[in-house]
Image 1 (cartoon, rainbow, N blue to C red):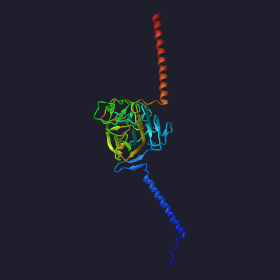
Image 2: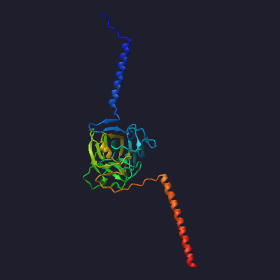
Image 3: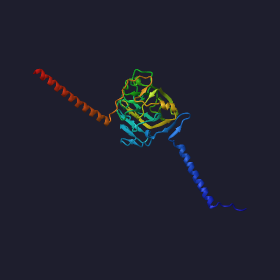
Length: 347
């Protein structure tokens, strides 16, 4: 029987090229399957684009105290290999993490991966953490490590009940507050007089991951959580008619007092939501100056006057001087006439 014909050198070269290209394609498919892309589409909903300038994840590059960092640390916050610790499980600590880039998105979704844990038992732990979208950044204060009378949105994961008489609320508790700078957060009543809503969230000392999502779409605020280890979002707060200005900053902060906990942030991911508005809705959308909530009365705050330009300031000074000189001249003339009339009456 005749021996089978051996493939020529050209056929062997083509076979090697096919094997090499096939291996490259397989490797590319494996990489695409294991790495989440910067965007994805939800069935029947908006397209979500990851905004890296407003997002944070391991290995936490771009985090520091310099002006060139995208995220700035404050107080006792420190970067670890697996998380950013806002406060350690020690008394009287305060820490924060703030994005340096203002956000000008109309519709967005912020996903927060966090962990709260410590040695305290029952109610001997505190105080919790907050997620912020506010006009001012890097302003330490008493509200979960941030300033009081803030301007913007605050979402609080409160782990300690300060109001001893209340019985219907189980802690830890998630609540939200919109402020135009006129309201104070009431610590003694756990923020109840100014909250938009809330829900119980058992988030301490869990062995699985805990997540919180804040979605702002067409002036509709939605807050959901995934704290049961089921990888499913559960509703917490729904509030229509929320008006938030653009150009504010995202941040997160925490504080401990006589009681303490470890408050860790693993990641912050901000998505831009597109395709949620019709052309008519785009025309009707107007930027607002101060945060507000429809059907919720907030003390009115007047818009501060815009700073004067150099030309306007020069013109004001110039015409003020001209008016002053004119007034002095008129005064001198009237004074001379009065003296003349006085002399005539004397003689």
